[in-house]
Length: 441
Image (cartoon, rainbow, N blue to C red; front, top):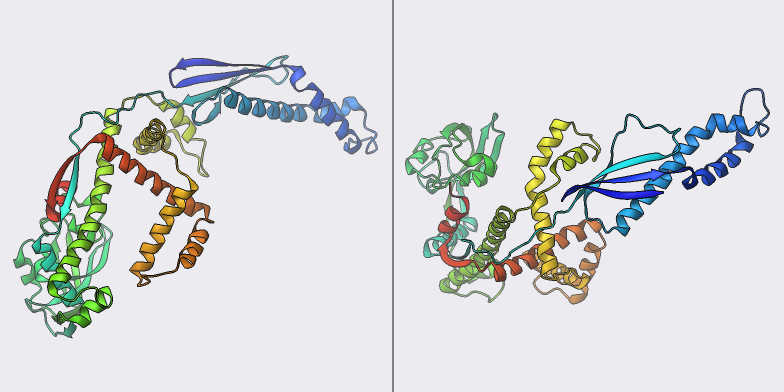
């Protein structure tokens, strides 16, 4: 067999395989001999069919099967021996003139190659690493929310200025159907809440989403509108009132502090505010890290230039998956996934350049930390090592979980690498300023 690569450009090649009789003749003959005792042809007893008739009836199909096996195995070994770094899998080229009766059988496969490119993690950029602080306004608001949450709800007949109103926002066209609780300070224009004053359970109040909140992104929380739809959304939404309450605020005492944080952890309002600040800023740090990772990702995708075998990948997309795609559908799917593919390649290059590897110990350590955090959230603050490791073992026995957690470990390692190499500018902001920077128009 002769097999060779024909370069088209830096990311596209064709593998050409020429198969001759010597490559498959022996195996075909063996299969014919095995078939003879089982062959049935009208006019002959089973097992007594002449060999030429067996070859005539079964030979072509057997030849095609054996040649296909030879080609598949040779192609796999060639890709390995040449150390080809492929995108997708080889695609057979259609040859209208191909004949199984030819002395030499020529098979061609299109392949797409991973591009070679330079990755500069230290390239000049304007990326910002945000350090988000919890200001007094946020802390005071959280204290009041705690007092409301643990206070006594007093049902009311009608909505008043200090009411908490529970109900459901709906808009059938936009698929909005979300239950929530609102109060006067929710809306950008406090006069909007006046529309609810005097209303009763069962009444419906209609408002427009445009300019309803200080930040349009609140639509994501209050009405479960997707991020892509929040900007400039201007539709009427109906709020059906289901409950009306005022809150008798809970007293800020040791009983409440212990209920919130465990016995003796907090013993004064000042310590409560300090704990709120600490917990909030820990959450903000995670959000800031996610934004940093996203910003670096976008920068690297935009600044790292390389070609992809786009046309090959579009054809390949038509052949994979349970549902075969049309050329038009493959075009759309490629456009949707191209940016993700580019970053996947950048991510791999970054890890290779920096010699980052994910070991089982890394995965186990990360999973252990996650399990302890989750247990703490449910009040199990001092689990034994034996309990934790038992859960870790069960989690890591699930391959889907291993894949999910491995991706998180990679993201964590890349984040640390990007912090070091990209050298972002550090900027201290409030949470409101961070939200504006993250989701601003």
